[in-house]
Structure formats: C-alpha cells, structure tokens
Image (cartoon, rainbow, N blue to C red; front, side, top):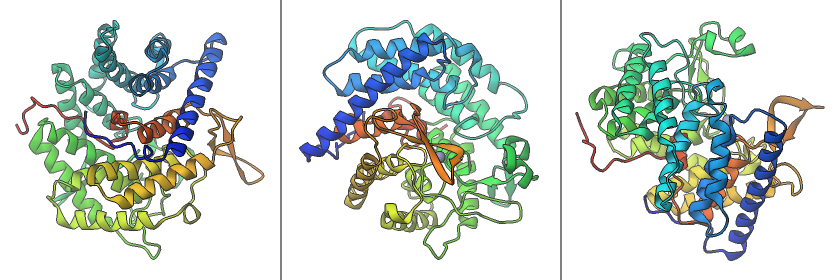
Length: 430
Ligand SMILES: [Zn+2]
C-alpha cells in the first residue's frame, strides 16, 4: 500500500460529518440490498456494495463489515452467469472486487472460498478475449480496457498475463495508424440511439470512460508492469501524439471535447472524470509524470491550471456521484495532491467535497445522495433518483469520503484508472 494522507483529518467537525454520511449511506445500502433480495430483484450489482463494506472493514474498527461484504458478493455470484463481461456492473467488476476483497480478508486471517469462482471468471473472460477478431467495444466501462483492468489485478497469474497479451493484440489490430500517430475509432454500431444516427461513420472518443485516454493509461500501466513493454509503449506514445495533434485550447480555457468526428468537429465536454479535461489530467498525469513527452506534459500542466480555476458556478455539475459529479472532481484533485503534494489540489479537493455534501438531501436517496437519471427530465428539470452504483451513485460518494477521512489508500480507484497496481517482483521490461 502507498502512503496516503487523510485530507479531512485536520478538521474534526468536517471529518465527523463525512463519517456520518458514510455510515448513513452504508445503512441505507444494507436496507435497500435486503429489500431487493427479498423481492427477488436483480442482484448482479450487489458486489459494488461489497467493495464499500470491504473498505469499511479496513477503515473502521467497529462493525462486522467483512460478513456484510461476503453476503453482498454471494448475491452477485449466484447471478454471475447472466452478467455482461464489462468492468462496471459486469463480470470483470465482480471478479475485480472478489480479488480485491480477498486481499483484505487475507489480512484479517479468515479466508473465503473465493479461489474457485475467481478461476471460473478468469476462464470465462479469457475465452472471450481469445477470439481471433474483437468486435465488441474497446473502452474502460464495457470493453477490452475494462477486462484488461481486471486481468491486471489478477497478475502475476499466467492466465492473466495470457489474457493481457491477447487484449494488447486486439488493441493493436483495432487501432488506426497515421504516420507515427495512432488512435481508436468507435464504430457507429457501438453507439446508442441518436448518436448512431448522427455519427454514421463513428467517432474518436476523447473521454477516459469510453475513449482513447483510457486506452493510453491502461497501456502505460501494462508497460510499467513489464507486460508487452515495447508494444504498449509504442501504442501509448502514438496515441498521445494523436491526442496532442487534436488538442485545441478554446476561449474558455478548455482543451478537449467529448469526441472528434471524422470531419474534425469536437463538441465541448463537461467538467468530469468520464469526459473532458479533468478526467484526462486525473488519469494521464500518471503517464506524463514519466517525463518522456515534454509537449504533452506542458499541455497537461495548463489543463490542470485551468481545472483548478473552475468553481461550481462555472461548470455544469448537477449531482455528487463519481462519474460526472462533484465527488469525482474532489477525488481527482485529491489523487493529484497525494501524488505531487500540490497544495492547490488539496484545497480544490476540499472545495468539491464541500459542494458534494451540500448537494445532499437528508432523508432522501441513499444516505441523502441523489443522482441525476440520464435522459429523463420533468418540465425541463433533471430528475434526481436514489442510485446505489459505484460509478454514478452513492457507493462512489461513500468511497471518496472514506478516502478523505482515513489514511487507507483508496486502491479501488484503479478501476477508474486513477492509480495503478505495482508488482515488486515483476520485470520492468521484456
Ligand atoms: Zn459520466
């Protein structure tokens, strides 16, 4: 585990408030989970609650959190056969969580029988990526990169290494090369609804969640672990060159939009982890910190300066969850602060935590957390609903608050490509 500073620890009042919110979220999740289980509702995402309970076991001295985590995991495991392969809400996410929580269990000396199910998940996903031609999405949330994030967690097992080599093969085959630059196109058949109609030739996605920046950071993590070092470096550097070729600073100070169409149009992006400059600097500053591309480093430095200037009144943040809400902004600044010691980022992390806490509606939602329901509005107003999810709901909010009040490193954010696993005995190059 790395060194981690609890940024709320200096302020007893704020720290207590954040702890209370975390406890309220957990209590509501337990109630909701039990109700859904008794009503026979789909339990596939119950493992996301287990991730939170696992961190509660690490950070909190009281409560039988590991038992609760095991119960929630088992609820997902029983329906795993029907789950999609992806990292968020799918088998890769379930497998990632089982592996991660098993390590917490091992510290606690009580070993669950998780090995069999993990091997089953390895086999199922390995078979999926073993196909000759990959026709599915390449992204972090639902595609190849997300499955790769799962297999990084399973290293140094040989099945994981085999799967990761196959994933790199697919990414290499899918990339479009132009001179020394390369990128990945999202084909129109992978788009939903109106996007498919508007983008008959697809587009090049610029968000961490679904696009090229997520691939770059994933390949950089692989190279650092010594997996397919040269190929991963080459692809990551080619894609970084492509990103820089398309970087345009606008009058409002932002650089990257949501995507680039084959005609070169780039609609503006939100201030979020999933799309836009904030997510790009939050993930790719790990890559740029290696100091091998000064022009890219300079671009990210300017992006960070611009992101630090933005207040809640200047950006369109409608709710608190991680994906595109206030707590995601807080965690990105907190991660950069922990990595670089930049006190401006600490201050911004605290600012966005305060905004997220102000957005709560005690007595409503899950622990007072409400999330915007995508594509639904009433009288022009967004509809806010109770959503337990890690990505865009209360679980992500609780995990970020926990990381602000406790000295335990939030390693769960490897799923968001905000940090990466290190293997002490793994070769650095091959
Ligand atoms: Zn989002």
